Each structure stands twice: as structure tokens, then as C-alpha cells.
Length: 163
Image (cartoon, rainbow, N blue to C red; front, side):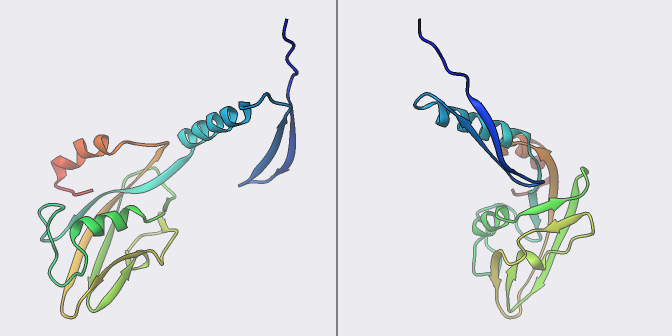
């Protein structure tokens, strides 16, 4: 009969945002299995917020262009997906962007209230030329874990939003 050694868990370092633990001894390959399982559980459990839809004035679909803006709408949407948002409420919130050129527009140019914080305000969104303007409204939703885009599309399709 094969005898298994019971692993010991040792706490090395722990604070509010970080924890370092050692689990030993483990059979070969078990560390990867445990690590992957822990990662998946943590990702599914962590609360967060994200921009879930965007409505740009004068834009009908994601393959459109905005006059005077270097990037097309698809690239703007991809850049907006990179915005890190922190929401202090669980309710859906609307944030706005109202810019006039010439300007290099970043996430810090988005108008928010005290319930929403843009974590990466230097994140590049697009470049707008002289005499051009762009107005957009974005929806920020809070949630837990990963939400597939298809679930958002069902709701946003009725509202004529793009993301």
C-alpha cells in the first residue's frame, strides 16, 4: 500500500492585500494542480467593476468612425476595455466623456462621481484632432468573477450600446 505524507501549510507573510504560504511536501505535479485550482477559485470570488457598455454620440455600430478621431470605434472600444475601474457601490453607474480636440484623451478625462474611481487615469483611449469633439456615456457595473460578453450583449442590445 502506498503511504501519503500529509502536507503542512505554513504562513510566511500575510496582510490585507497579500498572502504568502508554503505547502509541502507535495508529489510531483501537485503544486501546479493546487495553484491552478486556487487561482480559479480566487478569480471567481473576487468582486470588481468594469465598463460594460458605451454609447458614443453619432456612432451607429462598432465598425464606424468618428470624424477627427485617429482611431476607429473598434479600437476606442478595445482601449476602453483596458480601463481599471473601482466602484464603491453595487448599483449600475453612468460615467461620461466629453472632449474637444486637439487632445490625447486618457481615462483620466472621464467624468465620474465620488462612487467611481478610475484606477489607471493615464490609460490612453484615443487622439482627437483640431475642431473635433466626442461625447460618450459608459455604464459601469459591479460583479463577482468573470461575466461573459454574451450576457451583457442581451441587455445592451436593447439599449443601443456598443460594448
